Length: 451
Ligand SMILES: Cc1cc2nc3c(=O)[nH]c(=O)nc-3n(C[C@H](O)[C@H](O)[C@H](O)COP(=O)(O)OP(=O)(O)OC[C@H]3O[C@@H](n4cnc5c(N)ncnc54)[C@H](O)[C@@H]3O)c2cc1C
Image (cartoon, rainbow, N blue to C red):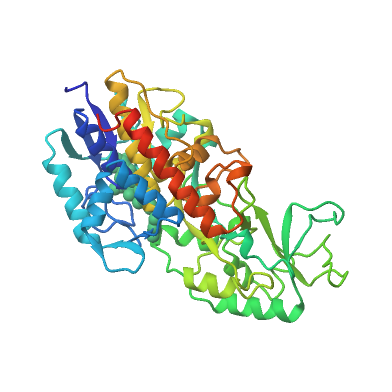
């Protein structure tokens, strides 16, 4: 059944998945992609679904957050994950693809789809017709301005300064201690990793020398602390390695200042302290306060493990700094990915605060399916929270202002009852995997998801 038609803005991962899902459900789709007429500064081809950086979709192991998400997407009939599986390269336990083969497959299939028309044009303002905005982290300036007007300036962010996130049970609590500044009595909201002077100086030295990710031209202003356009970027968001370069004690007087803290092992104030703040409700993840960084991922692992208490730390997300246009979704979107202000306008992809290729494809799947259902006057879907996709979308649309930040799939997002809590992490994850499989399987059948 052909319907009124849908506009999809952005031929990236989310936009292509959304367009395909809507088209497969009989909706006529006009997919707008501004490349190659207007470039993002990061993409290098004119193909749809170009992977701008890594060619890895992350772990394919089901007991990893991304692995579970990938499996759910396979169950849901994701078009892009099918293309990724077809373009897969040998990469151990990860799903890595031949990037050219992947984007060629997506582009060819989209161009040949009878219900999709690809239009190479920059969309400068939010369309008035039913639409999905999936213009990504590098959304063009005029469209960003239009989104800011529509949602309110305060609900649009331009830069990302993400600190690494550590799995709590890998922190060595015989060295690290819980406390809030000037409050040794209560249990304390922070986990503190104390350093003596030698440990601090060695750490700072290694931090300054560590290998960095080369900045692209549009990101260079970040390192100098200067920002162009309307972006929100503050001195406080400078990469930790850049701050460290300013002087031997720059960090000890800055984000690593030890004031108001005493190491319970010595009863004294440490020379410096790295603080970690709880990052999810379950308390299984902690982020490193003030550690936004541009170091390569292997160097983050090596250098941050020099911090006493983090010798064996496992990172569920590494720090990053790049231009990233994203909205404050909890105040802008419903769990169906409709905007709160306009039920016929959906958003998906990195612009809603989802991180990672698989997560962005997942949000495209939901927006595409729901936009089709909206146009056909059918009930819209919310995914079960016990699934990784459901929990990721739940976080994106429900996080508090204080906690909200771009998020990728991880087990800390999943809900559980007291009975379901297994101490052994591997067993716990496997239980979550089984639970997701059963619930999603039933949900797909009950709601005729492919209909
Ligand atoms: C420099 C950089 C490196 C990254 N590295 C990684 C990585 O290694 N791993 C990872 O998982 N994620 C990475 N990301 C995040 C990555 O962008 C997303 O995971 C993924 O590409 C997001 O999918 P998307 O569909 O939301 O956006 P995109 O894939 O960027 O697609 C958005 C599309 O919209 C188009 N567009 C923008 N504005 C308009 C407009 N006004 N009109 C028409 N078209 C428009 C763009 O040209 C683009 O093709 C990186 C991001 C950046 C900026």
